[in-house]
Image (tube, rainbow, N blue to C red; front, side):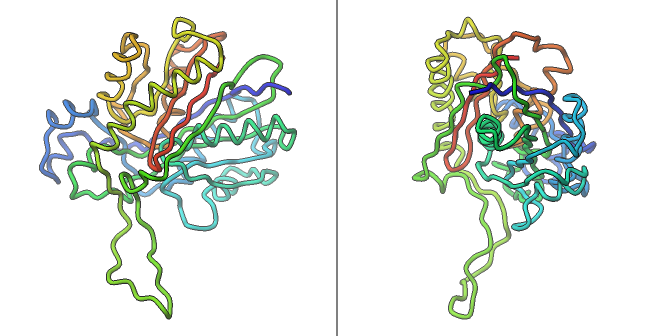
Length: 323
């Protein structure tokens, strides 16, 4: 079975920067309160661009780096919790925006784990010869479903998109990839949707679509699952942490990473973080981080890195990437 590599990475974030001080003007909070609890200093907020718009701009950058044209694409997968519409998929809007009319398109919903979930699907399509290539995108405009009156959640999230082009390879690329979920904890992080309403059912009330979260439960879950996921990848790949150049986690909260680093017995610098600039961009966070690492030449050919994510569902995912 042939290998699959990441041939190009691209990202895009809106121009509008919302700092912690900006947030303090609309909700009871402060820069010190947010920074000390999360590590976040600012985030990007859409001024009208929707999820597919961000995704398309990230996609074009990834395609350019992979030396592919949109017409070359076989498959587009978008991971998102904030789609343009319930149907059609955000992926078809991306296809239209970039002119990739030879590609099959669909979305997946796995919250903040979505990018690695989508990466897994794209890898399997290529390995099974159903696709010659795949464009995998994590894209979110979480600002449209954020409750801006809830200081416990509105301080966390930002908008952005990241994309990866997958191609077959003779050399090792993406491996030891896996996904997991535990639906028994689904209520702890949730974005509600349209209630059942028909001639036979009238809901008591219809609430705005918005994100809700039990922060303590999410922290407890995430802190432990990062350890489990990293150790599973190392075991599957027959490697140790000494073999790994960087761990690239979902960018959710500095305290989660601080806890994981301490438990793994590695310096915090082993984890690449940029959440201070972008906040939690859900499915977009890992590819945005990867793009920054490549632009800064932090990752070099031959480096081994672990991607690890966790999110609503609860879901989790991880993989090894050899660059």
